[in-house]
Image 1 (cartoon, rainbow, N blue to C red):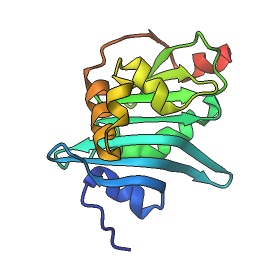
Image 2 (image 1 turned 120 degrees about the horizontal axis):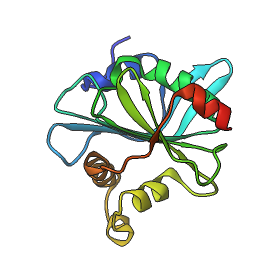
Image 3 (image 1 turned 90 degrees about the vertical axis):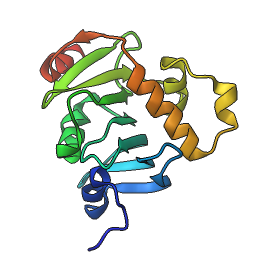
Length: 176
């Protein structure tokens, strides 16, 4: 199957049928950046998704510089890491909101050398959580196109320097 996606970071995900319900798939307003907003299929049987996903890659890189989305349970993190495979990199900014974490839980977990922010989410959206977390101007963002919103989120994430307790995936399981 030939893909129409020109970004190496997204080509395998598209070929494997993982990019679902796209609100945006394509170049953004930043030259050289490619973005996606939708859902990312992690497994098909049973179906597991990274919901409300935002992702971007810069300058034709084979890895994503930014990804954010929501998981229904912390236990789906290994499926996410497997689905992403080589599209994660050291220095990328990866924000995963998890429904079954206690509200005060905020961790960083390393997978294949890349650090993931693991954060709780309740009855809000990943978009709103990111705006708050990254200190972005919600009023200004309302006037932006989907591509411009992806750029604002990506740029904010790439500048994000907050650190949280670094734990292993197994330690996180014990804390559920």
